[in-house]
Image 1: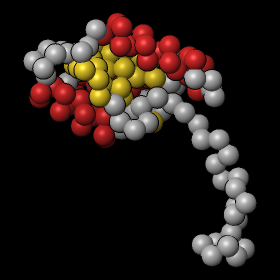
Image 2 (image 1 turned 45 degrees about the vertical axis):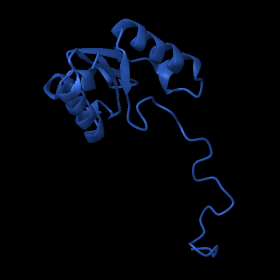
Image 3 (image 1 turned 30 degrees about the vertical axis):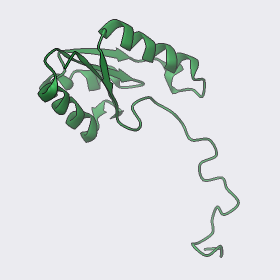
Length: 119
């Protein structure tokens, strides 16, 4: 199997367990190198911990633009990671790229219990 690029999910600089597991699996199945791409605030700190799980090189993208609602900076970082690594395969957990949920907790049922009654 060719080189693999893993998009890493982290929480404030601590890689999520699922990302560590994906890196370990990638290291096991790849004949080439395993690269990691980390995005958002804390990316550099998260990247420093990934060698233990099989990442031979880490691409950390730490920018306030990646935390915004605009998808342009996120797409540009993803493309840059793919191009720089040259990896033939990619793997990513569900939330590797920072995103915010719009309207979270603002629906008509906010403050209501399971059956629509006020708590």
